[in-house]
Length: 257
Picture 1 (cartoon, one colour):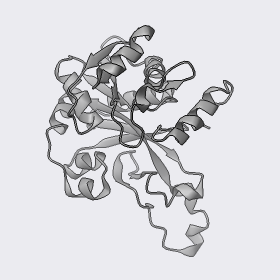
Picture 2: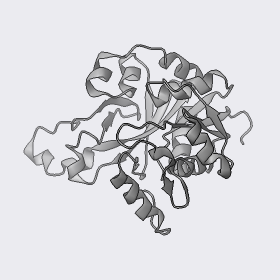
Picture 3: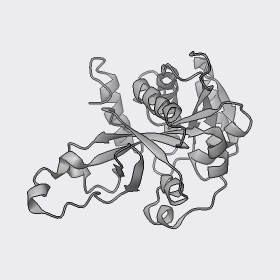
């Protein structure tokens, strides 16, 4: 750990009662519960000093106990993973808090490091995240693939489920997929901002797009965004689980493929 570097805590929120895939967080995957893959990959990030699973159900604690994971129980009534992480942050002195989603079994440790480093290098920003260039045209119009546009300094201008930017001219549309970027659901916060953010009311655009990060932008704060080759695969359905399982069963295949 570099002398003078702020202490970095990574929290992996784990909610048992997923709407689309109940209990997914502890479904067996390559010999261990799904959440353990996210937890162990997050631990491999060199800038992370400590990693915790923030659980809402004793079943999660029971499932991960044999693997020696550090786990804290949180209230079961949190509306989002951000609120769950904020509860952990309230009782922890870490200056930088990383949010790695519990269903991101293929999370890239290098991308975690890049996002942490970006926040450390940009004192004006309260939060950092990541994006990757869209190469599959089908994702451009897919509302489940959240798009992001940034300014020249790498700060987020807007996040949307719609295709942004809109390409007006036909000549530019021919190479349109080269200018679209998909948001990767990894977040790094300054602790004091995270505690404030969790108490802020929802904002109009956040409510319309159903994207929490818009609350930050609408409130006038900076989010710095790093570019990555990592393409996150969150497990929202049994089909997603099988897709991740196929990747894990091929050790030579990169998680970013």
